[in-house]
Each structure stands twice: as structure tokens, then as C-alpha cells.
Image (cartoon, rainbow, N blue to C red):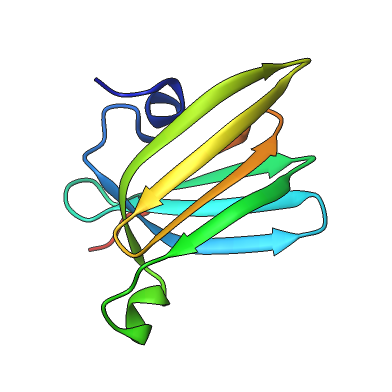
Length: 111
């Protein structure tokens, strides 16, 4: 069963990969796209973000380069409009705290 954040990010789309990640003070922006199916890019912006952990377990150094296979996402309500998010990828896992993300889907039509 999908988690609340997975439903927010994926909707009815198939499993996605992380194709972009931008970190700046207090902001984390994650760009996702499905490996198959409709060509849709989803951008999630997390504000008041604080990175709390990163674990990497690559078979090869290149495994840490984007894109990353997204295995799953978890979210935990911390109260006071704060959440802990955990993104599980094939070679890296990271967690952070922030407010709930603003999510925008951008359809890309490729002929």
C-alpha cells in the first residue's frame, strides 16, 4: 500500500525515478519522472527543510549520479505542521524534516 507522500508525488503514475535534486538553505526541490508511461515530470518543493541523514550504499561510484531509482517514500507527522520524510532509492537513502511539500506536475509532450 502506498504512503501518503507517495500518493501525493505519484498519483496514479507508475514507479518513478528521481531525475533532479536541488538543495539550498531551507529548501529541497525534488524532480521525479516515470521510467515508463506518460511523460510527466513532478516537482516537489519542501520548504523549511532540514536534512537529517544520508546513507549511501553504491555498488559503483556512478550509482550515486542521478537519476536514482526510487523504491519508496515514507512520511511521519511530527506535529506543528512538520513532517519527517525518508526517500529510499537503490543506492542512497536520505531523510529530512520540513513542511508538507508543494507539488506541481508538468506534462511533457514529446513527438
